Amino acid sequence: MKIILDSNIWISFAIGKRLLELEYVFNQSDICIYTCYQLHREVNVTLQKPKLQKYISIERRKVLLDYMATCPTAIIEAQTTHCRDPKDNFLLSLAQTVRADFLITGDNDLLVLKRHFSTVIVSFNDFISLLR
Image (cartoon, rainbow, N blue to C red; front, side, top):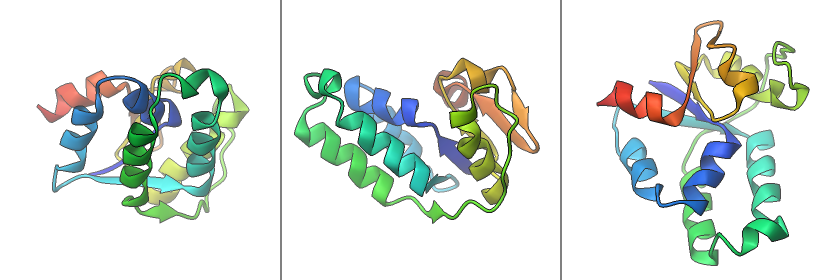
């Protein structure tokens, strides 16, 4: 199963107490989590924001980035403009490029689409429910 985690999901893992759930997903042998340059950049920029510095320890930031580093990094080939928020189009393009089964997000601009070609767009909680 090919999945993509939106940057808001990655950041929420670092802020909250959900790193164990991220670990659970990573430990599923049939799941491959894809990233791309744009996603890495967005996560890194967000992690540097002063308002988040007080919520995310250096250790948690390192754990998160270590997880991201283990994911295959795709070069986006497809270009789409289907999202009502243009800055999220790269996620749809990534999903299309890798033929992802799921795009997991907390962003309503993406969730409202429900699907992009063969990629199902769901919240993290819905994805976890599907796994169990």
